[in-house]
Length: 95
Image (cartoon, rainbow, N blue to C red; front, side, top):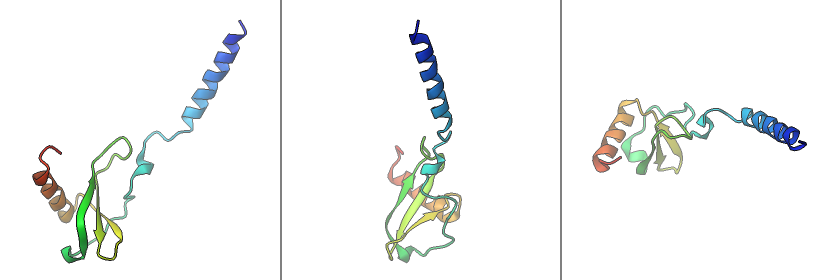
């Protein structure tokens, strides 16, 4: 009968530890509301990286690399972001 208090204690400890974890994985998002306003296509190096919503980040994120090797986030709701997403869907119809 001494195992019942031990199991109860471990269960309470597990519940307390689980409550300390963040409920959403939004802290794993790469773009934290810091989007570039405008960027010319000549300043973009390579293809944009698109991260679709997942359990880690509930937002669609578009990241472009500039010619100065800086990664910048593009607002997916902006006209430029919508164009990038549209082109991505045409290239990858299964995505």
